Length: 254
Ligand code: F6P
Image 1 (spheres, rainbow, N blue to C red):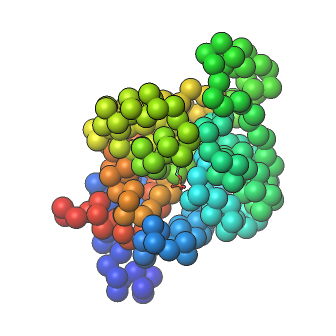
Image 2: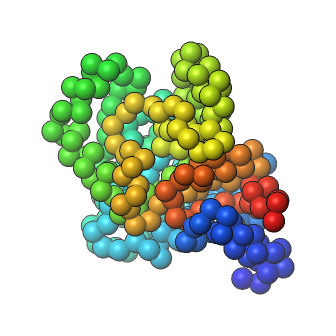
């Protein structure tokens, strides 16, 4: 508390809350682009916030990415009954350590919760996709995901994410041409927050977020400021956990 007053972070938290119309913003000192320690602090802040809101029998969906993997690293037992963790979407082309499935299993184990995973080949043809979503096992887990109580998710730069996922060149081109800036949940957004591209996979869809109690975005680093701005134009998240570098850029006009 004392530290925050000194650094003026509380003021920025308030400004961000107003700017993006959020219920809660937490800003940790530093720039996670430069120091892993700062990304770990994002993880810790996310874990402590989660502990405040989670209740018995809740379903918690988590996305992939390096920020989420540090949420997993810092997770500790939630001391709640029957909490179920699920990955938010099927494979999005991330490497194993950054995949939602991997992170979901680790978070659940450390939280002493249950988990269910979603196996979807990636990339997948339209035909295979249409038959996979008919599978009862896939439908069952999709149901959990789409009705989750809490979602923990990352936000990334559009082109960085498209490349990291080995997206085919023509799709990267399409994202660039339509001025894609930010990415979350496999959706790519332009500066106005319009969806310019979407990865076809099962699980959470943007419209599902409207019904969820706590949608918690965890993203920091100066390099993500524009991406975050684009996501929050139309974003359905109500909580943001970020760092000082991103927060200062996002509130520069205040
Ligand atoms: O691919 C999963 C994901 O959560 C993306 O939606 C997001 O853009 C990205 O990871 C964030 O990754 P990182 O935390 O490594 O920047």
